[in-house]
Amino acid sequence: MLSAMATLILQVATNYQDNETEGIPLGLELFMLGLAFLLLIALPLLTLWKGIWVNYPPYLQNKYKPYLEEIPLYHRLNESQKRDFERKVQRFIAQKKFISRSDNLKISPRKKALIAGTAIELTFGFKRFDFAHFDRILIYENDYYSKITKQYHRGEVNIKGFVVLSWAAFEEGNADREDGINLGVHELAHAIKLENKIVNRNYRFISKPDYRQFLNFYKEFAAKPHSTNDFLRKYGKTNIHEFFAVCCENFIERPEEFEAKMPDLYRHLCKLLRIDPIRIGNRLRS
Ligand SMILES: [Zn+2]
Image (cartoon, rainbow, N blue to C red):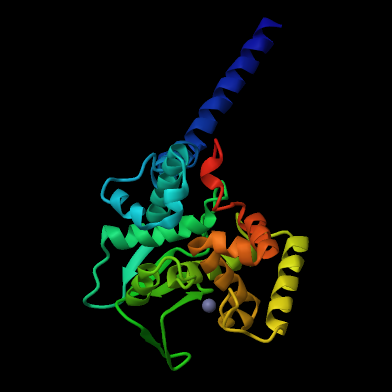
């Protein structure tokens, strides 16, 4: 019995020895260890680091801060909402690439702060609205020539993932913040509406019944003959996309007048954009 056991142990030991000599080559072993380290430790750490420092910067850098004074909605916010607004502006700046398309145009902190501020002005009502599809902002010094349409443009939103702006037109829109005409708000409103269609975080942020109701507002507006006294400009009759963009321009620049002249449409926009600019500052928590 004892000798049988000794033989078995010897056999196992011999097999173990054999496995050792015929096992995985050292190079492959090291490669697999490296791969495991990358997948289990390095990549999750990198994602976490990027998540904290790129997507969620804790506060707005000082170089951008003074320019938020130029954003009308910012003035309507209470102190805690202002901090939230600043964080969102910083996140937008960190997430997007701002690209100059003219030799004389420098991407300054003011340009970044004003473009990001306009984007957040429109989406402040959302806990998080990343404009995930649009990662590049192309800026021209003036109106630019499009080879596709063979026309000069002031701005556009391209489904390939970029927003294009003429800086001169952007500044012109901001020069009067009460006339309901603002290129920056207009183009970013187009971007928001596209995000509603693209499958990502903000896909279908407008529910189907809300969209149908908005469509009815558009049809009613488009069917009426235009009068110079009308609150919304005629360009809003072009199609539902332009109607949304024109509504947003007025919603941001002159909400009190909007509510007084077209109360039902104003309230519906509050619902779609999850914010009432007139009363936002009275809320205790944003
Ligand atoms: Zn438009």
